[in-house]
Structure formats: C-alpha cells, structure tokens
Amino acid sequence: MTNIIVAFSKPEDAKSIKNIVMKNGFLVVAVCTSGAQTISSLEGLNGGIIISGYRFEDMLFKDLYQNLPENFEMLLVASQNRVGDDLNYKHLVYLPMPLKVHDLIATLSMMCEAQIRLKKKRKQKPQPRSEEDRLLITKAKELLMDRNHMTEVEAHRYLQKCSMDSGTGMVETAQMVISLIQI
Image 1 (spheres, rainbow, N blue to C red):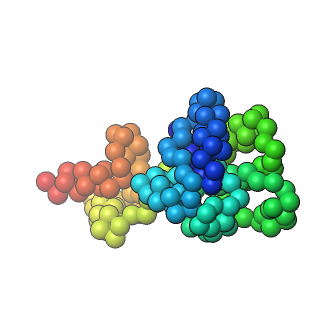
Image 2 (image 1 turned 135 degrees about the horizontal axis):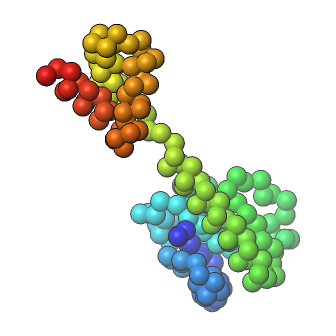
Image 3 (image 1 turned 180 degrees about the vertical axis):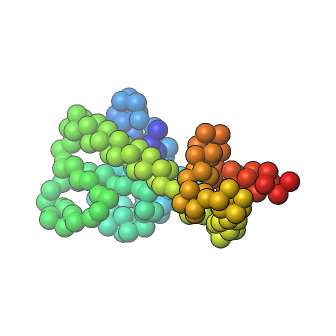
C-alpha cells in the first residue's frame, strides 16, 4: 500500500481530503498543515504521495517539492490562476480547483499504481557484487576449468545452472563448488 500524506494549510481542507481518500481505500499516514510538518513526516517512509495545496504558512508547494526525497511524488491541488504555467516538474501531478472527487481518486489510483511499478522495478534490479564475491566466483570457475577441462564460459554456465537448479545464489553455489572440489 502506498503511503499518502495530506498537506493543506487549512485543517478543514486537509481533514476533508483525508476522509475522501480513506473512504476510497487509500492509506493516509499523516495530515499536515505546514511545509515543515510535512517534511518531518516523510522521515521513516520509503516512498509515497503527498496531496498538497498551493501555499502553507511557511512555504509554497515549490519549496516543499524541492525538499522531497526521490521516491515521493506530489499531487498538487490548486486553482489554475494561482499555479499558472509553471508546472514543469518531474514527480508532480496537478489537479485544478474546484476538485471533483472522481478525478482525485482516479488520479491517486494512477499515481499509486505507478509507485508500485517503480518499486517492483527497483527490486528486480540486480545488486552489484562485491569484489570478494567476484573473486569467489572466479576461483570456482578456475577450479572447474582445471579439474573438468571447461572453458570459462562453460564454467560460468555450469555455476549459473547449478545456482538455478538448487535455488541458491551464484556466490553460495561458488562456495559449494570450491568446498566440494578442495576435499
């Protein structure tokens, strides 16, 4: 579930947006009335969406946007005459006032789905191996090449196949091969 923070300068506006969002099945983790309060509520969260008004007592939405971590997006709700044409931001979606509930929920759903896709994409990205792990795999390949007269490509494929067949990582498989061969 995507973390949602509602940030409006008027507490009544924040509370009504929060109620609408929660009634439609979204998780609101904080309701804030200032930019500083919003920024402090981001700590401990690893991503989410901020539904924000245009102005706070201590900053504008632009200032809040500039202080957002990379894994947060902003849904700006403001009147067109206040915002103007200055909305060229990467992780910002704009909804004009007066706000329609259907538009808010549809936009929020779209943004949540995009956040979920990004999280999956980040998780699928393989972690770079440490130098120690690379040396271990290289040693296992060298042992396979010497003992079984394989080429480096064949030894690598053998390690990959064993790793996939046993459901273990490549490093763990290399450790097993080294321990078995050195016996």
